[in-house]
Length: 198
View 1 (tube, rainbow, N blue to C red):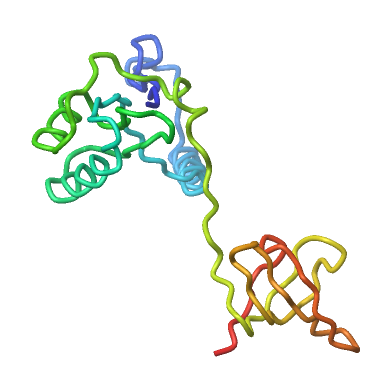
View 2 (view 1 turned 180 degrees about the vertical axis):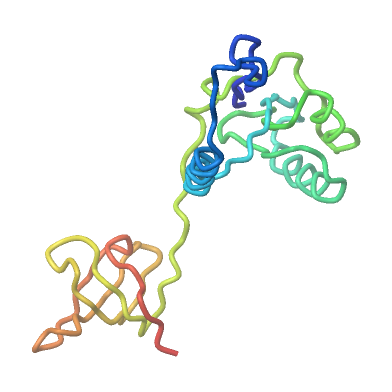
């Protein structure tokens, strides 16, 4: 849903250097300018931009999860230009599909059980943003890992993981530089694994 800027040159932006005898260009100036352009291009990350739209798909009530599963499999097998499938919790009878265009969304849901139709109007991201929740990526922390504490009073201290409580999002660690090993309970977000003892 990004609007790519129009990068085509306007007539007034183009100078015809060949027809202007007052312009004198030295070959070393061109090489220096080319080197500067190359350095600037290397520093900038290349982002692939594509246009997409979000469409609401009407489904049979309480069958949204099944439609998402079928649609996801169909998209993978047939290689449709569908970029995401959103199942908003609490919204019965609808899912959202981000696709290249309306035709692609309709082709993707064709033959999907319990999927009825793509609604005629596209949906703006701002309209459904409040229904989405960010999920944390689960950290791979294991017993006996060596981690660095990255927040709190023990910041920058190295510790050994003694126990991982994924249900509560906590770890029990022992500081490596402590004179007496004392188990300390920290949030999983407060440590970063730096070595894995195998």
